[in-house]
Length: 108
Image (spheres, one colour):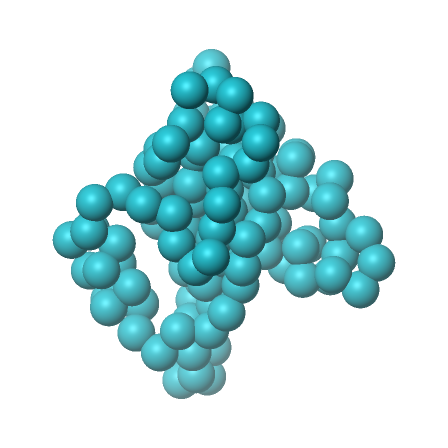
């Protein structure tokens, strides 16, 4: 599977979970991940994706974190560089209270 095909499959999985009030957040995160993925890695058999958007009007940078196509969290960050430096300096790990989805555990 090509990188683009893998990204498309992951984003499709995120889109299918866009329901109810949380759907708007999921849709925004899906859009962000489609445009601004800056880091990807595999942890315990699960693909993790970090996306950082563009800062608007001097404010915070939007962050989205996805594990195996499931949105884990979104939040604003003050420093894009600090997030990327921490990501790059630490060993691959699940972040921001993420857990490995059951499907990923069974692949180990």
